[in-house]
Image 1 (cartoon, rainbow over the protein chains, first blue to last red):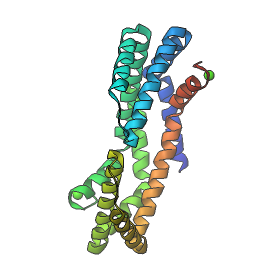
Image 2 (spheres, chains in turn cyan, green):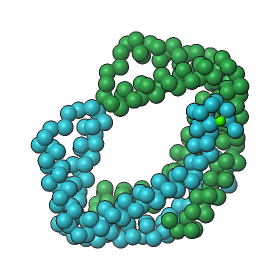
Image 3 (tube, each protein chain N blue to C red):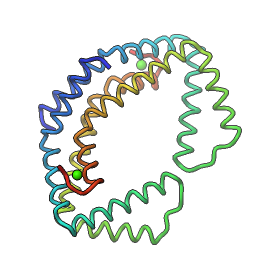
Length: 122
Length: 122
Ligand SMILES: [Ca+2]
Ligand SMILES: [Ca+2]
């Protein structure tokens, strides 16, 4: 990788670290981690979500019981003020990353897009 | 998204566009697209790869015949000089993107990593 690109990546890393989105997310994580009960509920929710995702990706069947358990945990999470704030922060951060990626990946988008359409790379 | 972050993303987009990896990839795409036979082989290969990926993700079974067809097309591609150069360029570009992502995503890596380990967000 050229030094120039590496510099840009590092500058961007710093900008993300200083962004309102990231500092907010970090603060919310801190808040959840300091709260024993919130932390337990959140970790349980995350474990269940990851378990279901793995099952889905491996093509395994998801039981009705598992769906119910996931819904119950999701409800607990939504009712919990600190956790739902953390999840809002996560969503904002994830949208920011998506936006940044969209900008950065434009050259490749254009390249692949042009080939898809008519095979001419402009 | 803050103006600062957007500026950084745009600068990075320009740097990627001007990178040796991208200009090389673009030149190879052009070369393949100008060559009717190369273009046909490459598009066929890509269609087969995408088809297999979709099947895999949906959990559908991949037949022995499909595996053989994929191998045959992969061989054709490897033997084709222009296409194999294009695929090398694609791999270099993909490694560059991975490296850049690793740098940019450091703040999030650290945040999630710290929670994973002991629940303290430092
Ligand atoms: Ca075109
Ligand atoms: Ca820690």
